[in-house]
Image (cartoon, rainbow, N blue to C red; front, side, top):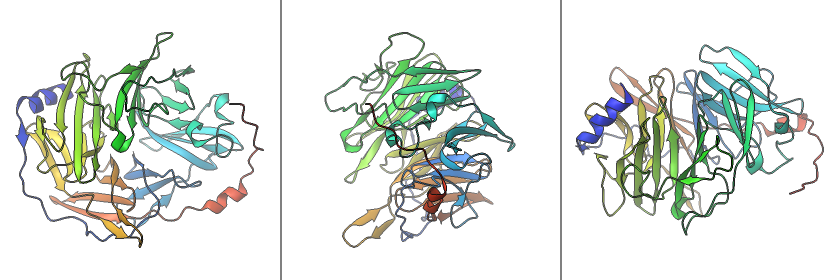
Length: 402
């Protein structure tokens, strides 16, 4: 369905779904996982799973049928650091012979190696801090990555731009980095900050203009200017050219804040969901109060919403369509001196339609619809093989000059 036509439909009629919650698809008592999973990326009939807690084998593979995640083998890559979805498949960033390598795999499983800027090579593992190692970001280009304070992107050739200092746009905001969530659309970089209970924001940067500075897009009056509140940015998504979707908010101390915002190709912003514990101003409403923890799109460009306390939803012709009900915060494990509670962090849809949700303490939760009914299972993150680091010869550490 055309995203613009969908927007007209869902903004014209406030929609409240059935208040009835279905039977949970998963038991509350799930095996605890020490490793937190931040990112899931559609890959074949499953997802690539990324965890920042693992020094080796950081990128793994999960599919519905498997009980545990699996090793991802990419020819020409000795150690995988990062992966990201691209327009026609997936990109892998890793290490081979003490140099960074970039491999692209298309939807039909054909792989090719892309050239890498020379400045990438010294930036890995122990050589520099994790915050300045290159990491891939979603883009309309062939590939894009941020390495420290420099943005790199490539179509026919590589280009780069040093990112200017981020101003303290409002009193509570601490511009300690260049954002945690990114999307590069043409020559415009969108960055979202998520500082949890301390808030966050959305900003953009025009890379085509010399001397351009960051533009604050959140904390604006309701209307066409941008996003009404400075809240943590959970996701930035562009399923089709010109359309940008942004999810904001958090779940904290029993309360939930959430926002879903859309910018059309003309640059007009519309807020579809805007809810906090005191008031729900949403055009679209969840059946129970919930935060939004992630956005995803399938290969047809349809939008999916991960609502932490309510389940997974999809905007449709009648408003919000609830695919299934599930309280992702309901899982907990007593660790002796504290209680580990599940927190969902990302959503991805595989090419076969299976849905995957990453969590902070309970691995990957996988969902499949068959014969009109949804089933679910937990996929645990098996212990990474950190011994492989001993077999890799790294260059000596160099002196830091900054």
